[in-house]
Length: 258
Image (cartoon, rainbow, N blue to C red):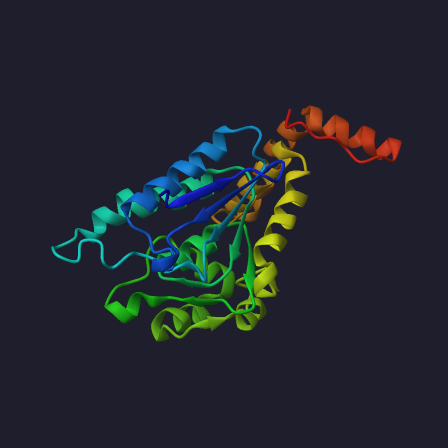
């Protein structure tokens, strides 16, 4: 049975479902490899304009499957470099919006992967847990990069060091998620948001994602120049011409990504 389901039923939206529900979608080598490949495939597929990531059953992702390698020693640094870093890099390099439908617990690297998405829709029954400290490990898979940028260093330290669960209401209040919704509608609402994004101009959407990432690492002057460069690209696009024409004609635009 596949450990990752890929669904293109919604035009322009690809839904990726982690499908190891009995293990709360914990990540083993097979699932890590499949997830990396799925994000890379979405990057190459022009029919895909937005991606939704969710989990089957009652969990989003419980992080690393601790049963993997339980009978012997595991080179954790190598596992991270070859198994988890490629997932996070593929998500960040995908110049299409990613919406995480956090339908249940997101723990450890599952927490990290949820934060690597561009937007998060969280079920009211879901929780985030930085579970690393509970098993004598440090946060990984980008958690130390994403978390302080979203909630600030002091709150990030509290979440990491106490390992206390963060419920949905708190997650929304401190800026970890965009929306909290009823558990039974979590996926549908994430897909509806992704469909809205997919109707936008693909080139401009991708360039905006690139600019937001750039701005996190550079000063204002550099960011202003980078914006100008990207605007030069977007301004020459057919989508820009279509957007202006649609505005003048008072009709919805039809963007092609050209």
